[in-house]
Image (cartoon, rainbow, N blue to C red; front, side, top):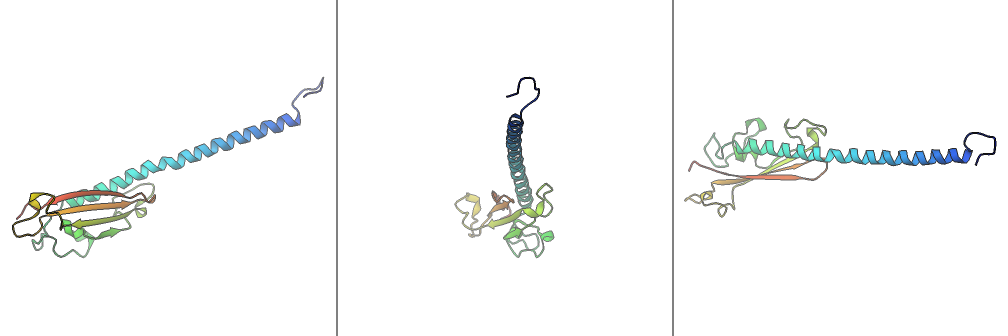
Length: 163
């Protein structure tokens, strides 16, 4: 493309080189962006699991009977700080994980719900129903929904040993 006796590149060759370099840079930038977006997914899933496990551990560590009146699933406590038995977490629903999570997404981005069920567990285990017909077991379900919307549910069963 050069004329005899001249040195350098023609304008067409320079423009073609710039175009190819631009295409390569844009493609590489898109791949890096895609990789960065997908790398946050596993971290958020691990944070979701950590929140669910921490709350479930806290609930399971509490007695099934209310220490105030020795009733199984008696009167619920009015404030979170006063929860002293498993059944106080009935219908627990928070937009914040109560300080259980410190991370990139922040605790306010996670929705936490807890359900405690004491009925319909008699067939689960022989100890779940006492001779008086009162339930002695509880099923605890902790549902955590992260910002991505992919909810995680953990569940556990507890048996009241005092009966």
